[in-house]
Image (cartoon, rainbow, N blue to C red; front, top):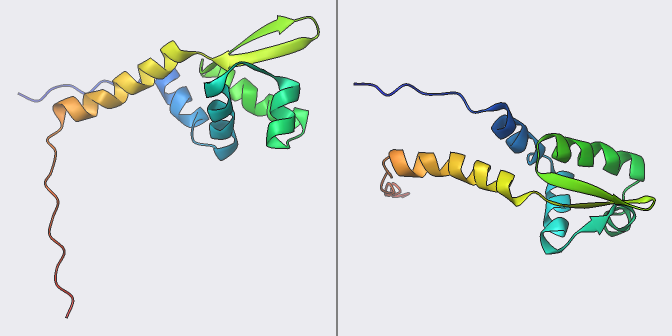
Length: 109
């Protein structure tokens, strides 16, 4: 019996799309340590606020980051439960897929 394959949810697709851009990965790495405001991220990444805002919106739309406003500043932090969703999605491949042994390299003479 063949098991039906369900398509990934929109949040999973959006999450992997958001993580496919190097600058967004750098943002995630910085937020791994602690919550940061936009001004700190601009300085650390040497990026204009307009460009950074676009990438933060993509991460926020994918539910990978959260924001909170304090006064006139917006602070960003990771939304760790959404990373767990992505991790669980990937773990299904490990759980149900046979791991293929490494193939020996052909001798080059």
